[in-house]
Length: 139
Image (cartoon, rainbow, N blue to C red; front, top):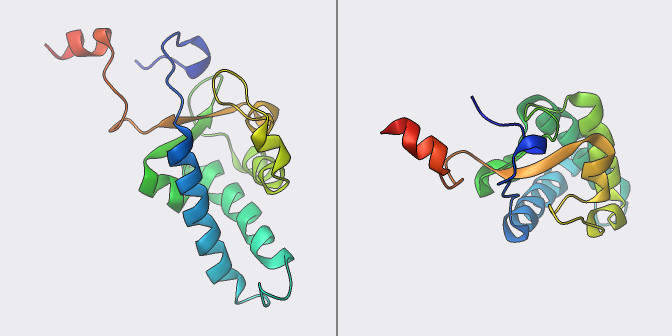
C-alpha cells in the first residue's frame, strides 16, 4: 500500500524543470485549442479559459494534463494521494493562471495554488526512485 504524500517522510516532489515543461506543453495546446474560440494573439482570455478548463478536467479526473503525462509528473491530493476532483482542479487552474501563487513555494515545492486545493506535484511511479521498503518487498 502506498503512503499518502502528507504522511511520507521521503516525499520527493516533482522537480521544477518537469513542472515547467508540462506547463509549456499545456500552454501550447491551449493556444491551439483557443483558436476555435477567438484569436489568441488579439484576445488574451481564450487560452487562459482553455487552460483553466483543461486543469479542471484533466487534473481533476486523471491527475495529469497532457503536458504532465509527457513530462511524467502527476498532481495528486496531498492528504490521500488520489485525484483532487474537478472543482479543486478548476480552482487550481484559476490560481495557476494568476501566476503569482505558483511562485510562492514551500519546502516541498507546493505553491499557494497547491496548498489552497490540497495538492502536490509528484513524479509518476515510473520515474520515482524505489524506496528501501518497496525494494525489499519485491525481493
